[in-house]
Length: 330
Image 1 (cartoon, helix red, strand yellow):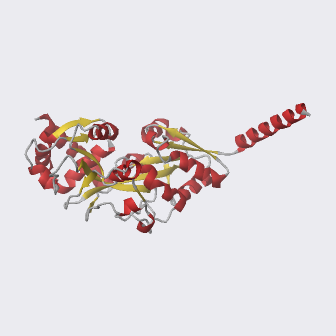
Image 2 (cartoon, rainbow, N blue to C red):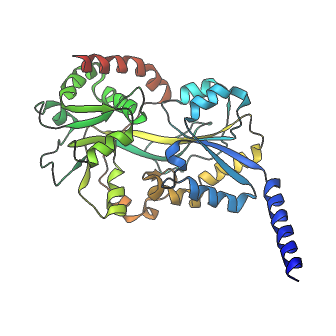
């Protein structure tokens, strides 16, 4: 009897493995943070696989550089975690297909009508500080510029390697236009250091090495919900804050185009959108305000949203970077 039970178990396991192997695999290229155990990837994988009768496989790394290298031979069906700083380059490849989604009822502060790149979340840049340590934070961007050189120790990210750093260039450029280099000259003495990415900058801030860090208006939500710490605050400026969405798109070369479309449908579903706030610490692209976690509903928010479209951002990127480099070389 024991031999029969063992044989039955083995056959059942083989059948299960065969069934799993028969399922189509949807390959999603995603940033490292997205697929980490604290990112939204694992819950999204579980949620989508429950509906698709498929195997969702994340491939973590630099999304667009890998796709550019692989060209039309890429094994990606979906690319997630792109941003508007790279969409001009991505669009020019001709590798991406229309998303076919209705974006008229997204819950974002800007209208979205891009037929290829679909936003799944958003936030706005902000300088975050610890209110128990910094008693006189700047009340405006101009206050930040006009403060004495030793008023604050700020950590920012390098615009050549960081999405946040590049968005800061565009934020300053949008506010100050032809006087952006003059603005950077005033900011530079207050910058303690420039880090390659957001993680390094935020780590220095939470370690107490800096008074302020370039991050997002949603960053304090993490401290409140995960750490029960309300000391971290985003400085809200009347000049406005720069809008930063995260995007997803499907590849024209997908071996499973119907499944890829089903994934894009899932991106705007209540299930996917309901995971974003507390897994990616940003606002979902399509979720009514009253369905957000209470902490997100109560976050201080700017009255004015600043945003440069893809073409204008691409046009300003080079000149803005040159202004930034000149200011920091003095």
